[in-house]
Every structure is written in C-alpha cells, then in structure tokens.
Amino acid sequence: MRLDNVKANSELSECESAAGPSAAARDKTLLARLARPDIRLAGPVNDAMHEKFQGQVAALSGAGPFVIALTTLGGDPEVARAMAADLRLLRAAEGCRFIFFGKSAVYSAGVTFMAGFPVADRWLERDARLMIHERKLDKMVHFEGPLQGCLSIAKALAHEIQNGITIEREGFAALIEESPLTLDEVIAKAPQNWYLDAQEALALKLIGDVI
Image (cartoon, rainbow, N blue to C red; front, side, top):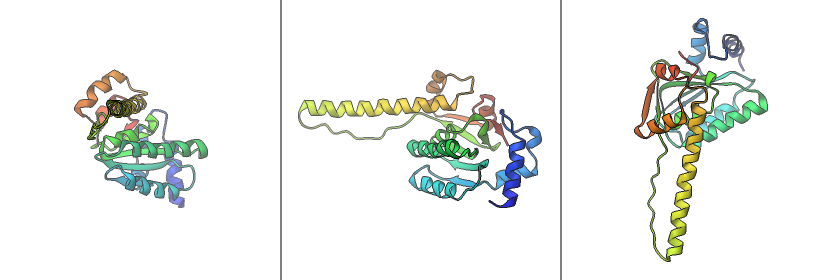
C-alpha cells in the first residue's frame, strides 16, 4: 500500500467514532480519500461485478479501513450476499475494516450489500438514494403428468418462495439493526419500492453518516 494511503487510512481511523465520522472529520484529506476509493463498483450486481470485486479485494494490503464505493440500480441479491460474506470473512480472519460509500443510486441488491456492513461503516454521498423492495420471482411453471408429480413440483416452488422470503427478512433485519424501524414496517413498505434520500436514511439510522 502506498505511503499516502497509509497516512489517509490512519487519519480516517482517528476521526471516526461509533456513531460515524464527526463533522470535524470532513476535511480535505477525508474527502480526497472518499473521492479515490480503494474499490469502485458500478452497474448491475451480477457475476461480473463479483469477479471485479474479488480482484480489487485481492489487490488490497493491510487492515484498512478501505473505502468501497458503489452505484447500482440493482441486480442479483445472492451475488450481493456473497460479496458481503467475502468482507465478513476478511473482517473475522484478518481484522480488516471496510467503509461502504453509496453514490448516486443504491437500489435493491445494492442495499442488500450495504446491509452487510456495520451501521457506522455505511456512508452515503449527499445526493444518493436508497431503494428497498421485496425480492422478485420470474418463473414459468408447466404441470404435466401424474398428479403426485405435479404436487411435488408445486411444493418445491412453494419451498423456494418461502426460502426467499426468509432470506429477504434476514436482510431487512440486518439493515435496520440500529434503526427505530420495525421489521413489520419495512415489510409493509417494501412491495411499493421504498425510496429514501441520504438524509432520510441517516435520520432512520440506516447509515452512519452523509458526506
């Protein structure tokens, strides 16, 4: 890691608290650090993003904190969960710290990824928007043959849907772990595509700070 990055990481660590960075921390050094994140991700959350993400993570050295900037309109929630799991393992195994920095749009699977960070390490750029919604299913099912076989297909689909709902609710619970929001409130809002600006997300304690 370059010396200037080490210095910036040190200053970033010193100016943070459990509630997120203080107003005094918002100096030129911090802004420059956020403007040049260690990992840059933009576009659909998919296998290609995951591959790019893994390559950038592999190039890091030290314990951080490392800034991960994300802009996305959404994508595959399972890829988002896998990326968050990658970081969780690095935190546990190597003591690494990662700062999520959402820019412009953090929609759908982007919020799933953000929920994998501690609340104090979730930051949004002031013009960023979050969008929270429930998982979608797009599947054609064809029934043909003995009824017992058709029933098994129907049960398998019901199990798939129930498992998706369970995972979705686990993600919502992680997202609101320090928020006054209840899980029932999020579940009620999600079907209508719930959009929040950065200040609304901060007021609800879904993020640590706005830059």
